Length: 175
Image (tube, rainbow, N blue to C red; front, side, top):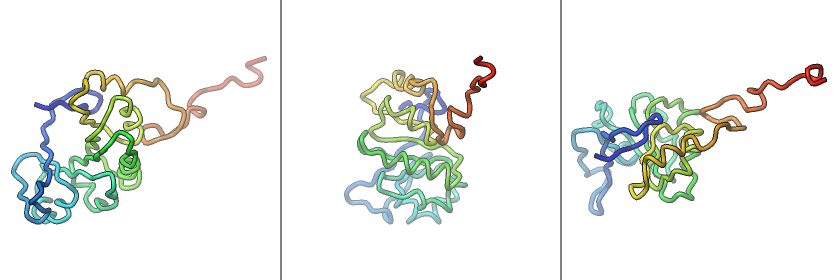
């Protein structure tokens, strides 16, 4: 069974990714029973059939918009964002918008070309689950979440910048 990192632990992945084959469309594909992460187009096309199920998640490509799910964030247990290459940073913005603007509270998973060096930054914008590349060590990737002990700026995971979190001595205390 495939393993993922979720909430800073390595766990079994209970979800199956649903991909459209060349001859399939969002209208014609049948979503099997069981926990599946479907493409956004499938979700939007078959929403009336899929929304009563609690075992359906949605994945967004890096060129799709978080706002497409604005009416659904409260009911989806999992949203995944695809990183087609490690250099494509659009998924960071999508994740931040889902968490900060749309109030998504469920599992937010990074999928695709997800590497150890990205995990710390992905967590800062709201990801709490990571399906790392299968050709890399997941144990090593887990360490990537702790690469840095402190972050200077604000982000999804820390609302206060470092200069406001650290007590500095007053002029009288220095003298």
